Length: 103
Image 1: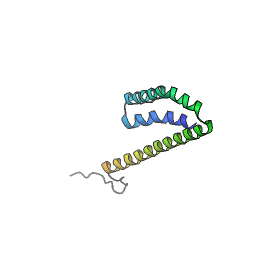
Image 2: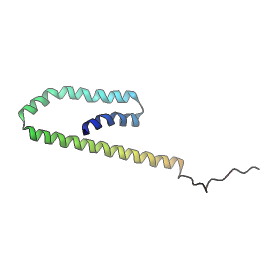
Image 3: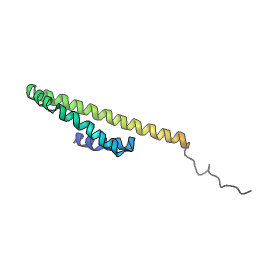
Image 4: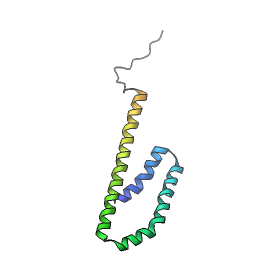
């Protein structure tokens, strides 16, 4: 289930950062090409090693990558909101806003 969330969230994150459908497509190609290239080696490795150890190693790798992606997303969200506050200034309260005076 976690890998399904990652495969759904990663293109959304790329689009949120880049605002480009081309970047989302390029990310897809960049993930498919190495996967296809390594499939034969991965199959041979899976046949030659202990299954439990292989599953433990790959699950740990998936969890590490997911945690890194989540940390990057939260850091980007925080920096974006801080940048917006620097540009616009602190939020104005109703008492600070005065009606324009006519001269």
